[in-house]
Image (cartoon, rainbow over all chains, first blue to last red; front, top):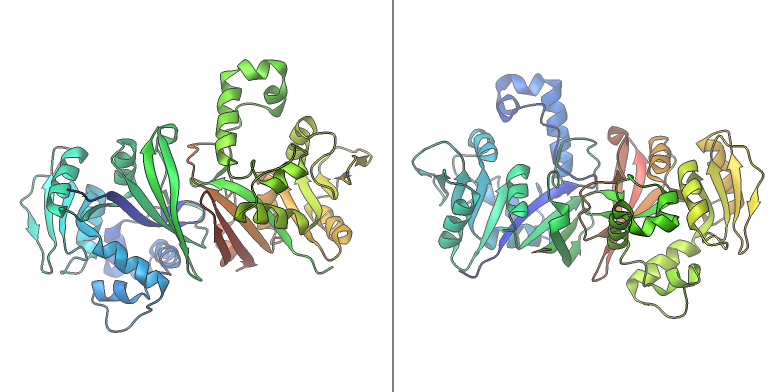
Length: 222
Length: 222
């Protein structure tokens, strides 16, 4: 078990990884959603935040959106991130939203450990994704994910609260932020509730394309 | 008058340009300050945020801190920023704090236009800095600064509120953020109160040293 524990997110320049949560995923995906101004605003902001990612070939392949796509630095970063992952860990809220949003072939292709109070049998999807529901806390979920990942890395997929819990527990080795040239004004902050005084960062790597800057930091306790 | 209007700040990865303002500049510089734990915390956090800047040769020269200093990319960025400035604009709060903190030879070496309700005669310092006190608003201060700067650029020096006012008024052409690998947890946010829906950014340039990433964005209205 030599893999690293990391997270990777797209963040706006003002610190948000998602627009304000005044709409639910169910509303976004409901037939009425497309006429709801709150949904329209949410989707516009989400689209601006993730604008760098959607056209990438690796992203399109992973979601089976069709042939083609961009193949520059941003694609390399996106592809390298997917290829390093041997298992994912996510929070209940991300799973609940994703269950409505993901295609049948969920876009993970690894075991996924969901930290939740819900008891449920493993849920196997076509394409190699199986969701396991872990009821005894974040450390147990991570332990199982590391076992499953072997020499590959474990990604803390999200959401923000789950990432914050793992950061505060000192269980994250490094993280990557794709910093979008966007101001959202409000939304879900990546670093809310993080115990800043106990986390030391070292800038490990910076890669900039014309549209986004990918920042990687090594994490240690202090 | 071909110069640009810009600001340049050091920001923590969680979005702060200064630690939480629970101490005043007067307290920091008072003889009792050095024994006050709030002052000690403030200074520690400020030092971590600005750690990349203090050792640079150009910074040391500008504040007459003595010979030597680092001369790599970070020094080039710091020096280039100083050399492009023909005039500065700052808010009353930054001036009031600076009046206590700056050495007699204030570190601007240009005309400085202070947006304030205080009426006061121009205050000339050795080394080329003269403070002018502007009582009729941010547009007037900028107009005077542009006149004084000629072909050079105008820097909106700070603080955060003043930067936000100029951003919201559509008067900033570009800005640079030196993104420090530091989490402060709380403090003064760069982008609070910014009207995000009306500001479009384009990533203009990214330069990374081993310790900090310098990001430059072009600003337009939308």
